[in-house]
Image (cartoon, rainbow over all chains, first blue to last red; front, top):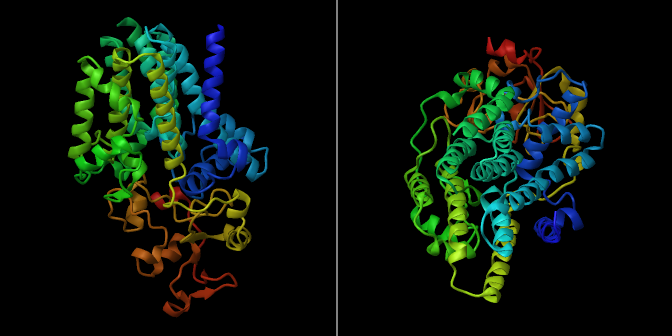
Length: 201
Length: 293
C-alpha cells in the first residue's frame, strides 16, 4: 500500500465518521428505533442465544415459525453471526452498539474494497475516491434494515469483482450476498454482475 | 467465461446454507401465491428523486426511503457525458420497471427497481467523469459537492424522521412494565397485540401470535384469516378479527388491546397493567408444528 492508499483510507474513514457521527460521537442509541430495534436487533438477540446454546438452534417459539428459511434474517451470514455471538455476552444496550456498529461498518468495508478494486481503471485519484464513496454509500441502501445494507455491500463488490474478473473475489461476494439475504436486490445485482463480466464495466 | 462460471459456482456453494431452506420453504409461504399487480412509481416522484433523497413523504403506502433514486448531485452532471453503453439499457429497463410496477418474480415491490436505477446511474456517472470539460479545481469543488450531497442524503434517510419512533435505549424500550409482567406470566401462553418494540417477543422470550408479513406460512395466514397477499401486518387480533374460541385454542393467554375486552366477554380479565387482559379460558399454547398440522 502506497501513501496515496493510506490517504484515501483516511478520507474514507473520515467520510464514514461524518456519515454516522451521531452513532460514533454523540449517542450510540440514536438509531435504536423503528424496524432496526423491533425486528433486526431482536432477531439478532435470539440468534446470539442460539449460538451460545441457550436456546435450540433454529427454534423460535416467539415469532418466526421458520426463521432459518427466511433469508432476510441473515441467520447464516458470517459477520451477522459474529456480531450476534459477541452481543450475547454483553448487556442489551452494549449488544445494540455491536449490532448497529456491524451494520454501518459495512458501508466502510464496501468503500475500502471498492477503492482497491477500482485501482485498475484509468481515472484520477479524486474520481476513484468519489466513485468508491458514491457506490458504497448509495442512498437507496441507507435503511434501518441490516439485511439490505449487508446485501448492497456485497453486490457492489460483486459487480466490481466481475469487472476485474477476479474469480475468487467474485465467488465470495456472491456467496456473501446470498447469505446476507436481501434477495429482491440480489436477483437484480447478480445478472448485472454477469453482464459486467461479459461486457466489461 | 470459465472464471465467471467458477465464481458463480463458488458463490452458490457458499450460499447453499441459506438457499436450500429458503427454496424448500418458499412454496409454503404466502409469497408463492399469485400477487396483486403493483402500482408503479409516478414519473414525477422519480424525477424529483434525482434531485433530493426525499421526493415525497410516502406513496402507495411506501415511505420515501423505498423510492429513493438519489445518487448525489455530481452524477446528474456527469451522466450526460457518459458515452453510450449497455448501462444506458440497464437504466432504461430499471426506470421502466419502476414506472410500470414490475417486480422480479416472487418478490413484492416494484420500488426495488429503484436500487437498479441508482446503481446504474452511479456506474454511468463513473463513465462520464473522465469526460468532464473542467480543470482540477472545478472538479475538486464538484467532488466536495458530491460528498456533501451524500452526507445530507444519509442524514435524511437514517433515521426516517418523522415517520419513525423516538430513539430509546434497548434496555428501556424492552423493559417496560408490560414487558416485565409478561416475562413473568406469559411462559404459559401466547400474547396477542404486542406493540412496538416488543412485537416479536424475542428479546423478552414472549410467545406471540407469530410473524404476519409477506413471507409468513400459508397456514399461519389461514389461522388469522389474513387475506392480504403481502401479510396484513396487524398484530392486534381484535383489529381485524372478532373474539372467539380460536384465540383460546391458539393458546392466547394475554391480549394487549385498547378495546375494553372485559366488556366483550367475561373470559377476559383486566390485569394491573393498563390495556392488558388475561384470557381465563386459554388452552396451553400449541407449538408452531402443532398449529401447522
